[in-house]
Length: 275
Image (tube, rainbow, N blue to C red; front, side, top):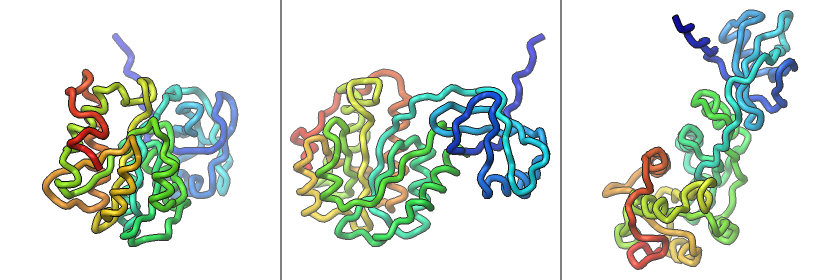
């Protein structure tokens, strides 16, 4: 009779310390409060830890902790994987929608989140520490082994000037005249070309979500000078920024999980998809 696999503890926390068997890792005050006061764990009860570098580990709470909690690391339960997902650039919006964008982008595998300031951006102040905390919590709950980088806000011209050439950039836009190619076709063509992931001939793509009211014609003209950029449409309706971000990443993830290479659709910068 086969033994049932060991049930893993539900509590999973991100730490910055190195992880290895036999060492002790001290939780930060917020984490200590969470495991002791909120979840009411007792000494020797187990939790899972990860740090984005050393995989995921099983550990147990050391006895005697009240204000400070030390986790005694026991064994690795998952080796570190390469989680090189797409990049997401977006124009910051009001507080709650921005939180949603960061949370869902983390859940959907984004590796780098880039707030970008455009002519119509309504929120120019971005709390990087707060967004990082949201990303950490989303990574803990979604089972990721890494936390996406939250970059400092940059103006759109600087983003365009510093965008790495090997990485494709898909710019979401609601206007059919400026965006005749649907996102699905554009991504399928990108996948067919082999530029899909770090394990293929190029890195995963990036996505740019504009502000409320969309990117201006001048901004779209500026992006036209970026050889790896393509403007795409997401459908017949005008979407909120947080909805658009989830939509592009969900399509990317669905294609990433699909077998095969996708259909042979137009490549970047063809006549139908010119910015």
